[in-house]
Length: 442
Ligand code: GDP
Ligand code: MG
Image 1 (cartoon, helix red, strand yellow):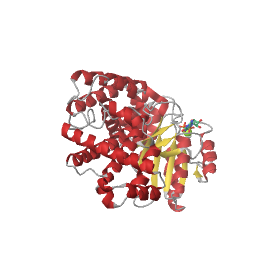
Image 2 (cartoon, protein in one colour; image 1 turned 60 degrees about the vertical axis):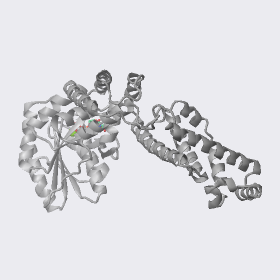
Image 3 (spheres, rainbow, N blue to C red; image 1 turned 180 degrees about the vertical axis):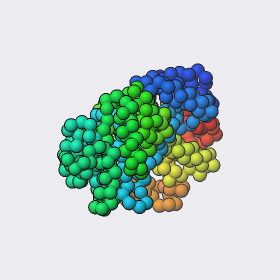
Image 4 (cartoon, rainbow, N blue to C red; image 1 turned 135 degrees about the horizontal axis):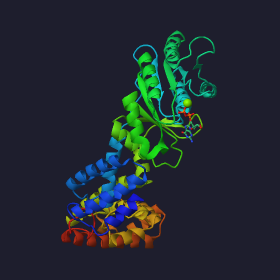
């Protein structure tokens, strides 16, 4: 995956102030491969990689993340931004029915999507109506009627011999029908050909002119790959559209089409269709798609965790300072243990926390239950004992052991450990920090 390859790229980079030009070039190469593997169109890849290089040049190497993680974070942020940032909501008409028109190639998933969208709207309390304007394929009207029945939404279709035979008239009549029957959303399914052709575009444009849709949605198969850009551009020029719906995301396409289309047309991807069932439909989530394009699994989650862990490391550092002032107490000791516990479980997940080095070994040997025992003992001490453990004599130890349900030996061990830790803290504070800890001097 990209994260593995970037980690290799940065194997030798530790603690430099900025990414070097060589690092940036190597990174750009890996991102380029990842995007091409995800089927992002070549011109889009070029533009995107150039933007990432530009941004990487200005970045300080962060304390929280290793360079590979840092680059992934930048790439992810840029991807999410292009894919539309926050999901854009449907625009509803202020008066009368909201008219949504679907356009796209044949087989893109328009007819299926029409019914899914209708169901989704219905579940939100809308009263949608479906409109069959694909009069090209013999079975298209029937297909929409079957789907409409599945989701319990009425379908407006030309009736044989009633004179309303062309798609433009059907579309126009459907809006009148929706007003009469008080449907608040009209979803117009249209015809598509296998390739982009002038006649199809003209028909779609005529329908658009007749009904002035509030939203034209371009429906596109996520598997389309490198053709995404030309197809999207043709529909943008020929019909125009406000948003994109990506279908067949249940397939194994990595979703490069989403990036290509969003990047070239500037229109947001609004919905995602991911299966044959009518409920296989959702708002489009740019962050999830970015992960899919980069093939990163949970890397972003891990990066967030690493940043949190870094904050904890900062807190540790603060505790260390305290130690330098001779104020390191059992309360601080417990807080440190708890921080170490969190850091420890995270360092196990991944090679995060750059430069933890020897410290990490210690973390990995950590026994979580041990912390709970320590906590029980410390909680059984009085505030005065926690502040000044020197006063903990034999009878106090017995009382603490009883109160915490531990043995006197364990209390003794804890107190010894505390004094040892305090001594170490003092040395570290004088020496300037835990060697190799991120963001720590020394
Ligand atoms: P249209 O020609 O644009 O109207 O496309 P259709 O709605 O007829 O869909 C074409 C084919 O793709 C049909 O067999 C659908 O069942 C299938 N399809 C549509 N959306 C999805 C999807 O999200 N996932 C999968 N797996 N199949 C889909
Ligand atoms: Mg269809």
